[in-house]
Length: 310
Image (tube, rainbow, N blue to C red; front, side):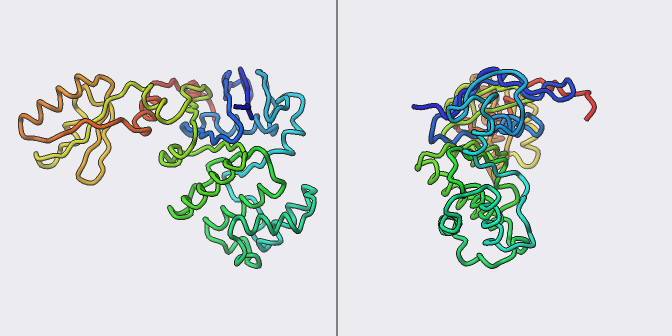
C-alpha cells in the first residue's frame, strides 16, 4: 500500500528537553492510525510535526509525498487539523463559521463546499444556530465539518471525542470510517480503549518514545499477558486478595466479574486455582484486552520528565 506518512527519527526538543524522541512511523493511505499514551507523552507534538505546524529538530521523512522539513506549507494545505478544544466562533452561527473558514482558506466553490460539508455532517437543521448554543456532540460535528471543507487528504484529530456522549462518539466514528473508505488518511489521538479498537492500527507513545505499534491484536499479543475472568464467592475483599497475588498485575471490576491479567500465565492459573479450591472464587481464562496491554506498557515505560520543572 502507498504510504501517506513515512518518517524516521522524528525528534522535537523544547528548552533542551526531548519531548519526541526518534520516532519511526509509517501510515498507509486510507488508514486510521490511533495514537495512545499518557498525558504529556508527545502525541500532540508528533501530530503537529507531521502536518507542518511544528519544526522538526531531527529526523526525516515524508507526509503525503512531501518532505516534512522543506515542504511544510504544501502539507498544511492538504491536511485538516481538529484541535482538542473547540476553536470556532461561538457568537457566529454554524453556517457563518463554515463560510468564514472557507473564505480564510480560500476554498474554491465556497458555497457548494459549505453545503456539502453541512449535508455530510448532518448539520442542515442547525445552520442558523449559534455555535455557542450547540451541545458538545454538535460542536464536534461543526469542527469536523470545518476541517473537511478543503477536502484534505490527511485528517488529524487530537482527542476529538472528549466530553461527548456515547451516541455522539459512535456517530463520529462512523463518519471517520466513511472518510477512510474514500481514501482519506486519519491520525487520531485518544484515551478511549474502545475508540482505539476501531482504528486500523495503533501506535503507543510513552514519554516521547514509540514503544508499540501495529494492529490492536498485534499489540495485545506482543504484551505477552494472560488474563482470566473471576467471580467471587468469598464475600467482600476479593479484589484486595487478587491484587495481593504475585502473579496478578492488574484487576478491573465489571459488575460481578473481575478481570485479572498478569505476565506469567502458568503462575496466574496456579494462584487462581488455589483460591478456587478454597471455595473463594470461580474463574475461566479469557483473552487479555487492549487496556491490559496499555497499563502494562505504562508500567514498563520510564518517565524521563520526572523531576523536571514544568
